[in-house]
Image 1 (cartoon, rainbow, N blue to C red):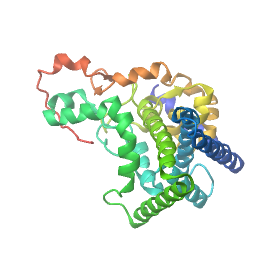
Image 2: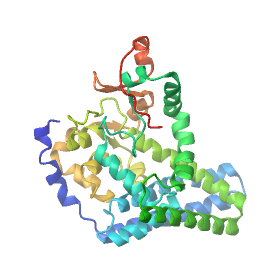
Image 3: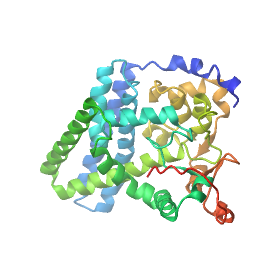
Length: 343
């Protein structure tokens, strides 16, 4: 897609930026309702077998992912017209998903403003090195990077580190309002967990909620990863970086089966979301289908997305992702580059 083709894109998306209160309320009902029911079914299934309980737990994890999408929209103030309503609902959903409203809102806004910009990596994104940076890096940094990009670490330990640990602490330089929101979220999480432990027992709580958390957390990180890590994604130095191109070429259209599209709140239409974060999730598909220039955006399916597991480094020369194996022949070269650590 050329710059000429993208000039009118944001204007074409604008009609879909208005939220609809009835649709937002209905989405809360058809998300929280099934989640609560499935959580309870997983709990009572424990009396028979943990493996039986995993069946409703898997589906509950899908609905927890959908809860996160509501939270995500609220941080963009796109779920309701009223900012206060977004803040209240977003904070509540943040307790369920273990994300502080203001902290995530700040980091995610930076992500939108810098996605695909090689000079502004490090906030709200997946740690990515270029081939030259990796080859110039000392052994310790290479080891740390390979450890970080290992799928078992990223999708296994990742949810534990990000959701349970990182989100509990304020970022450096956070303002008072943001700090207080993090403290409030932490207190509400403890109260919520304590009440559930009293109601069902701490063992049952850990088995049910722990399973749901690990599954939904892995799904969440996978979605974020695959929507920006595909072979011919978009990365440019700051001088060449362009917002609209980063949105339509650096954010994938993840074409999922209808059930998975529903559970993930249409976030597969990630290119539309990056074009305009003000489009609520329930209008993303409509915006895509009614915007002709978006017909040829990078599209991946459930099957083809698995290839992204081998993508580790961005090659600035070929303008695509490569694996560690692809650069073995370059390991003896000494390439001067400034390496930015974002672990």
